[in-house]
Amino acid sequence: MTETIPILQLDDLLLVSIQVDMHDRLALQLQDNLTEKISQTGARGVLIDISSLEVVDSFIGRVLANISSMARVLDAKTVVVGMQPAVAITLVELGLSLEGIQTALNVSKGMALLRRS
Amino acid sequence: MALAPLNKLPVTDESDIVKVRQAVRAATLEIKCSLVDQTKVVTAASELARNLLIYGGGGEVRIEILQERMRHGVRVTFEDQGPGIPDIEQALKDGYTSGKGMGLGLGGAKRLVTDFNIVSEAGKGTRVTITKWK
Image (cartoon, rainbow over all chains, first blue to last red):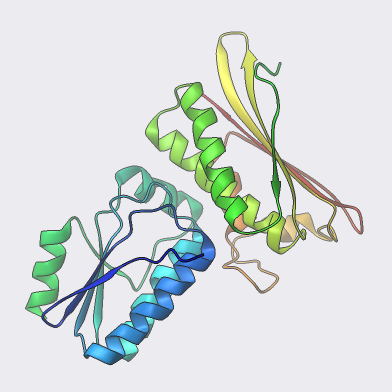
């Protein structure tokens, strides 16, 4: 599978918008690529837009948490933005509160959060 | 009573999990579930399809649309011929994991649907059935 999720660089920030229904391997690949890219570019912040994601299950939740932890170890801050309300309700009922993941309502609020730090 | 013909999907690799999500979404749309209910059932199906693959060594998913008097529902069955679950009570507890997941799969999926049924026999396999009534 050649499909990858693009990572854009804007100054010292990395931006990712997940637009596809990710299968597990693609999610893990994003985790690896992002970590690699943080280290390469010395990025200080990562913004992940999940507004197109209609489902976040425990696997994708864990990948987002992993990305957040790995970025932190590499001195970068991660913000996950744009979660759909139905996804938020489902995640909490599933028992996944995404602790340790910084979130923001949308891209501009997420950017403001990253720029502040 | 099952309305629509059975929709059967094999689950043998992880791209099949995506197909299960899409097929379950289509079924919930057919009975006009709310967006929150769609998301819940699809998420539960995603968890259970992954269990099927990881713990059951693959299996089959069947999707049915049900009608009972005036209400409609979606029933999804996950069946494998894997090793079975020795202690279902324990497996349903949050935080229980045999190592590869977060321990939210079974118990979490149960909370997202109306009816949840699990039958498992050691050495023979596991069948999980979830139903969401509209």
